[in-house]
Length: 429
Image 1 (tube, rainbow, N blue to C red):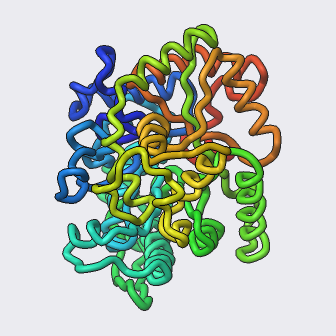
Image 2 (cartoon, rainbow, N blue to C red):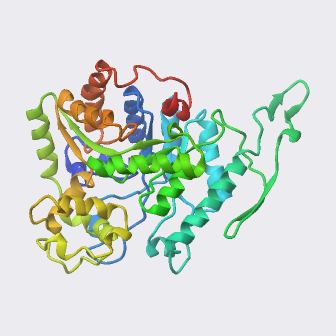
């Protein structure tokens, strides 16, 4: 999800049935939360981004409703927690800019108040523009960012252990509110991170938030293998997904002595479901006709690591991608994958794919058609589930819940009720 008009599809907000006019209202997110829980989803996850740069072309992201994060996702999630009882609630916060205490307190509060349903997507950030927003001249290099992230996660884990499970007493008769003997103060001294003290937030029902990550580079995969319980795979199809899955699970076991089942690996799929294949295809085409490709330029600049303001839309992508493009951002691998389909793939093609599916595989069709594709990928042993995105909010999500979820249940591939009360229960029980 995104706290803005679009997640993957940057044109669907223009549709007369979209909820874009409520993008800054509690009601929009409460409606979506109820739909997700009706569909028995494990949880929701909010991406985070900052305003694009100051050039005219970069501001097209704002002008045409590209991927914008307008609101603080943690506050949105608090609203969603109020109208649900099982749905996991996850958001992004960068270890590069936020100290451990701020992260631990924010996610600890959400975890406690939601009854143990919080998740933290751990990111390191990678743009100089983000660094400048937080008062720095430049972003740290990748190795330094991940080293710092290791320390931040270690420190947060210590802070979440400040309160023992039974430290909060609230005994009116004796007058004891909390047992100070059951509160553990701690210190942390790292190269980039340090603190001394304890967290104010009492322990939650699941102990601490679920840790999520999207490591694509070798260093990112190492970080995910060490810490993550949920990993967003940078690949969604074919041998690349299987290789990533196998390598990550192997790193968990061999390097960090974790069990493979301690982390779920989830590729992303964009689902456009309908009452029939023809109806779903017509529905998808009507949404795609609303896209303005210029809305994608800023995202593509970040992915490719090159400036695009003077590049004609019909330029072949092969003439744009730098030789070291794979080192810039995980998304560039997906770009190159589309580019290898045996035809001239242009910047316009890339922009339209960015605007309609963010290079995520798109399953368009009836419930049977969609589930056939999901089932084939799942049963091939290269993923543990899926991240499902929806184009038109809330209608595309409603269609998934109405058409796809019952078909998954009919085939015995998906739950018919929640197995417990916490986010970790839904993921691992």
